[in-house]
Length: 222
Image 1 (cartoon, rainbow, N blue to C red):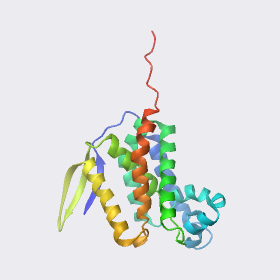
Image 2: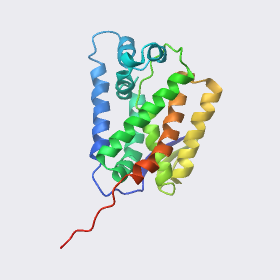
Image 3: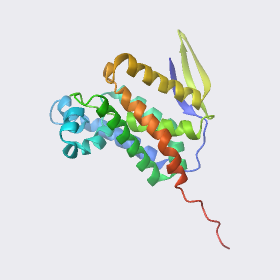
């Protein structure tokens, strides 16, 4: 078992959008407790239910985005926000704020559509930022494969900290998602594995044109 907690990859700019996304997710999580009604109805109304989307895509399209900010429990939220903090700041640093939030939301959309079309008849709501964050992980793999990530590694009763190259860590993470999807199905264990896979691959593909679209800075005239 492994637990990444910090990357050795400095940024040039303050990660305002990454922090704002984390704050928004935390705010919505606590808002969930004040929702008038059972939590299941909240997820049905604002999460992404594949069968509902297939039946009425236009009416349920906003749920693609609202689902990205809902979480099913504290550990669900904490794990997603940790990965967003570790890897999101560097992607924001490369893309800038507007391109970063656009990239993040598009990756979330791709992840959601992969989940929907793998199980169009599902009545189970999908919630969480995992799909969008998976896109960030895919982008990080493409841009910073050699960056070192400090990781807690649990070896039975022993715990040690290892500096692992991002490429190894992220490819291993993707492998777990693929294996889990094949072994347990698209919603095995209550996890939308295909959303993780789709978001990750989407991020790998999209980051290059997003990065290429940045205008080179012009030298200042004196």
